Length: 266
Ligand code: NAD
Image 1 (tube, rainbow, N blue to C red):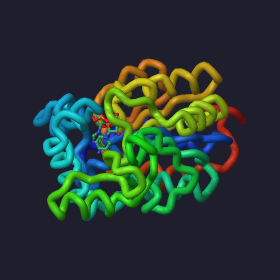
Image 2: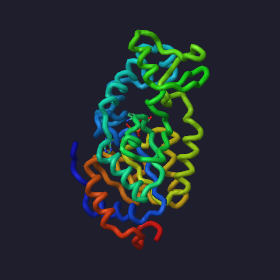
Image 3: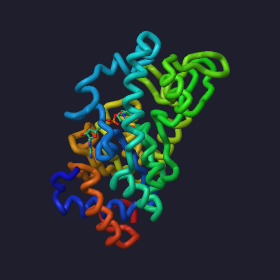
Image 4: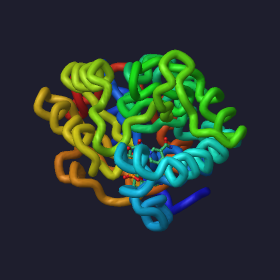
């Protein structure tokens, strides 16, 4: 998918920020994976335009209407089977390899950052590789859950017979505390936070740009639509992340490794 590119001057400013940072961190959301064929939640073509999240993505729905809940996840898993990392995932992994970025914090459960070769990925909303027992917290491969659904039974835990759910954070659930603490710590330490493809409407992740900014980091936002953090950002690139990527990475490579006056720490 392609779209109009932001003003080239904005891309140059963004590239300078990335080239100048010493401790860059990325925060990604569902928008980074739309160009891999996975719909996001809140944009015009997002999942919540067609489905009521309260019916498919809450702990209450999981317990009260498991058939509806599992059908939603079966469809997401089927889409995920064919999804591949797109240029935006590859660009973040590349920026990490060349030392521009350290941690990648993601709200996504699709594993596409790791598939792109990224390391140090903090999955604050869990993942779809695994299923977890809601009673004894035993974690198994998602295949165990899928096999039971394929056999026409509701998935249960081999250890305690409790109910199995995908190892993702549902509405009404807490975030895994270790993952959220790691994300907060990364935002406290970074000098640049690059937000890609998130509406920044879901708490507590929506607080992270504020944490980074309060500790002196610059914000770079790459998103198709406005976000509540735009006003605080040093640079906002409006558009499709995958289309912006070649121009941005090319310009980062053209920048000297050390900083530019007026752009982040030197
Ligand atoms: P969101 O749907 O609220 O926001 C996505 C944002 O990305 C929107 O503002 C949209 O304009 C923008 N966007 C869409 N396509 C884009 C593109 N190609 N380039 C740049 N921007 C683009 O998603 P969110 O902020 O991640 O919301 C958080 C919730 O979404 C989390 O709970 C997360 O677990 C969940 N989620 C994850 C996946 C996934 O794993 N791929 C998919 C759907 C939802």
